Length: 328
Image (cartoon, rainbow, N blue to C red; front, side):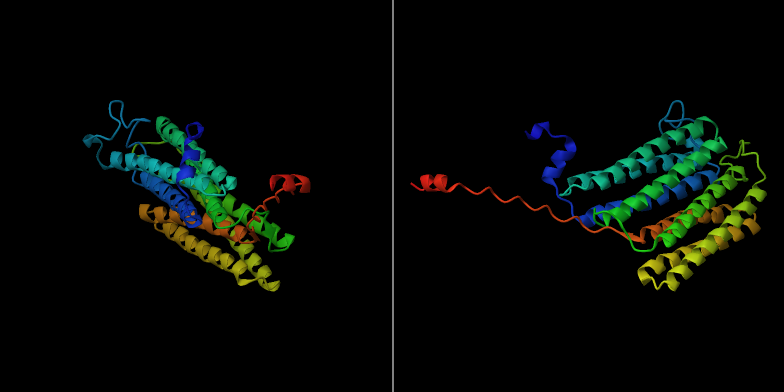
C-alpha cells in the first residue's frame, strides 16, 4: 500500500530526477561547503566569534541578534543560518539520489554522511561559543568542515561515474606516490589549522585563550610542508610524463601545482604584511581549493563503469500437453 511507504519512497514514485540533476546537487554541496568555511573564517577575522554569546539561541532572551549587538552579531548569526542552507542542499541531494531509478545506495550513503557531519559540526560550533572560543574546539570545528569538503567532493565524483568496481588507471607505485601526496597535503592543512589556533586572530576583541605555541615557529613548519608537497607533486607529474600517461591524468596534477603555488604566494604575502584579515580570508579559501585539487588528482587515477543492466530471466516453457489442452 502507498500509505506504508516512507516519505522518500513516496517521492521516488512521483519524481524521477535526471543524472544531471543529481550531479549538480552534489556540486552545489561542494560549493556551499566552501562558502561555510570561508564565512566561518570571516566570523573569526572580524572578531565576531562571540557576536552571539550563547547557543543555540543568539542571546538568553532572543533567537536572533539584537540591534545592540551590531555587525558582529549579524555576522555570527548569518554564519549559523548558512548551516540551514547547507542542510537543505544536502537534503535535496539525498532525496534526488534516493528518487532516481535505479537507486544508487553509494550516493545516498554519502549524502547521509554529509548530513551527519553537518549536524555534528553544528554542535561543535555551539560548543565553540559556549567555551568562549577555545582554540582546540575552534580547530576541531574547522577540521570537521574540511572532512565535509572531502566527502562532498567524493560524492560529486561518484555522481559522475558508474557503480562498478573501481579500476586503477596507473601502476601501483604511482598510486602509492599519489597517496603520499594526499597524506602530506592533509598534514599541511592540519598544521595550518594549528597556526590559526596559535596566531593573533582569536575571533573576538576580548582576550581569548590561544594554543600555547609560538605561531611563527609553527608557520615555519607549515612552510616546510609546502615544499614537501610541492616536491611530491612535481615528482608525480614527472613520473606520469615518463610513463606517457594520458593528459587526463597529468592535467589534475598541473592544476594542483598551480593552486598550491598561488596559495604559497598568498601565504608569503599575509606573513610579510602582518596577517591582514582580507589576505588571511583569501588564504582560507585557497586551502579549500588545495584540498579539492589534491582529491581530483587522486580520483582521476581510477574509473568506474556503469553496472550492466540486469537481464530478465526467460519465462518458463509451457508444457506441450498443457499448451494443447489450453488451446481447446
